[in-house]
Every structure is written in C-alpha cells, then in structure tokens.
Length: 165
Image (tube, rainbow, N blue to C red; front, side, top):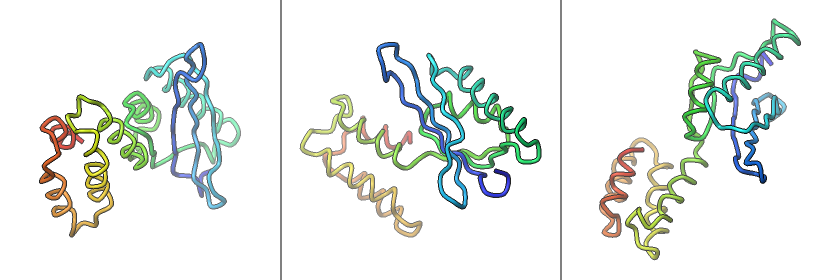
C-alpha cells in the first residue's frame, strides 16, 4: 500500500434495501489499477458511522503490516460532508477532491427540479453550458462562465445555485 496507493476513492449508496442500509466502497489507486480496500454496510450515513468504519480500516491495515498502514494523502468523494469530515478526522493530512461525475450528477439533478426555475426544454442547454465550464482550460474559464450566465433560460434560482458551487 505505502508505495502505490496514496489515493482513496470513496462512494456510498443508501437505501438499497427495505432496511435502508448504506453500502460504502473504499478503493485505492495502485500501479495495477483500482484495488478495493473495504466495503461497509451500515444503518446510517452519519459522520460517526463513517469515522468508525475508516478508523477500523486504518487499524486493520496497521495490524497486517505497520510499515505499510493506510495513510492516504488524497481522497476523492462526492459532496457528502459526513464522509469528508470523517476522512479528515481519521487522516488529518488528507487532501479532499470532489468527483467530477458526482458534481455533474448533482447539477443535473438540480436542473431536473422545478425549484431550479429552468424550463424543461432548456435544461440540456444549461447543463451543456455548465459542463463546458467544468472542462474549460484556465484561459477559457471566464468566457465559458460568461456564456453560462448570459443564457436567457438561466433562472435566478439557478444562478444562485451555480454561484454557490
């Protein structure tokens, strides 16, 4: 672990059964590809539950070989604050990044809500403009953002949402 796997990828899926259990997958990046390090099944998405799970995973890797215990320096997650806070609690020096897939998924879900104020026929155009911003290189970012915010179909609610990202 120590030489290769310094990056964790964490994702949870909730309410997968009648008991609303939460399945969390922890994967590390290695020179051989992604390697699953842990899967938890819990009854809660609380910060306390995640912290207990990550503490246990850290302890188990230390017991196997203290010289190669899990000490990630990068973590990639969705926007779940419980996961992010617990990762920082267990590994204080970890740098956290948001997963691009989850960012785009969250924006699409927001656009699908009537509360976004974006008309059904305009949602794809707004999403494409946002995606252009996400993928823009540094020199094109301002013009991409200007194009997004100049869309006539962009509601005030959606402008506030994008400004809050």
